[in-house]
Image 1 (cartoon, one colour):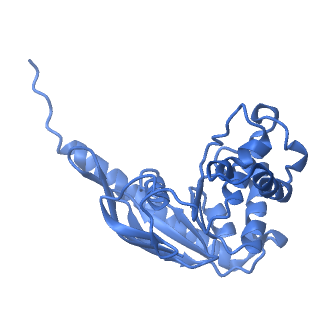
Image 2 (tube, one colour):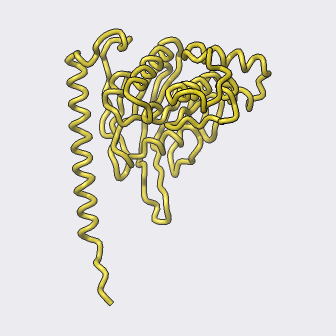
Length: 269
């Protein structure tokens, strides 16, 4: 469903690489999480896959079609809600269908189906300012799902939420993944979240962004039905990922210190 081959991305006049030779595939229905330190290029990669940002080199295909711009096969859920404050919950959820020129009755029925699944049916005619942050993020998820994409891209969608709301929405996302054949590429800074949600976790390093290692998560599903954190497999995979991220952060600090030591000092006038 998703095929990323040798993608690199550089910014600035000196062409500083943010991503270098990044390759990854994901099958239909697979949930893959990207985790790594800030600045490793997770969001940049997600935007390239979405077609919102061009790669410097490399190729991305979704369902066999080159991903060179936004399309109906892909939907993005951002960290921030990005809802229109003058639109109701229903109108926000139906927005993607509206710009695809889907007739009003059909788009409202499709949007309402997802609002109902996400527990927002009775808030359909409320405005964003009248509902909680967790509800707003659910509206963003409903808006993405209403267009019936093949690939769902999620950029730390629960990062700004309180712990209880975050765990509740993680469970809801698992149920959605079970009931659909969606392929999900999910960016997170939380190891717990990655283990809870994923079939596979991709650990990234920085300077430039690259894959350090991939982990298959073999904990049984659904994971909201039992205390997955009590399983030995959970402790093992969490410990290994944490150790890798700690080493990457330490190496990053060493690189920064070395760069400062080689920076010429200004001569006083």
